[in-house]
Length: 294
Image (cartoon, rainbow, N blue to C red):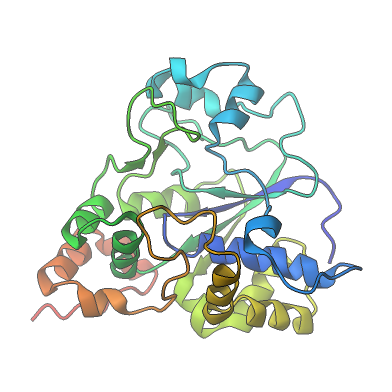
């Protein structure tokens, strides 16, 4: 299937849940399906699926403002209006990473992303125990801080008021609030992908992704793209370019492990129980119940 009908898509997730893997897969699938296929994917040059929805430069351009001058309460209600009067994103860059919850505490019930012309959302989720471990390695946070972050209703990236960073504040809230904000909203079609299924049921999970995004979906192409973007392949590609550009300074590497089950191994029983007791409904809903409470 082709995706020549205009419009764009969101790739939404809580941080460290597989969003970048999904973006790299999309890039590789399109590369393999192209008429002229370069020899190998370059992580720092080729992964250009589209701007992140929290880009300050893009929001300032679309809204005609200096977002550094606005508080969260002033900016968040405006963010969903970006792109209403112009083509939202550049042609060819149509798959846009989002870490925000669909709505924020300050957005007055409105989405913090534009829905005009959006064809749908891929929501990627991962066991919160494993997210905690991955956050710890990525941000160099101790595990107790990561558990607290997942349970914090006010959790956010770039949380400082009037912060002049290249991205604006991204409110996420508690892990379960973030999940529900996207999978239960009624404004956009949603495909839910569990990280665990991406690992254990790769061919069928990524075929469903390609079909949802109206990308080339020949099983041979999907399987080759999946093979080329395995964790081992991505680690090799990261080494070839001397480090992935999206890796924070404190992290040893971006593509670290890619495994599931690390949370059960590295979190204490008390930390695992805090997550299970703080996020029960959504963990049950997506089959993330495996804590021994004895």
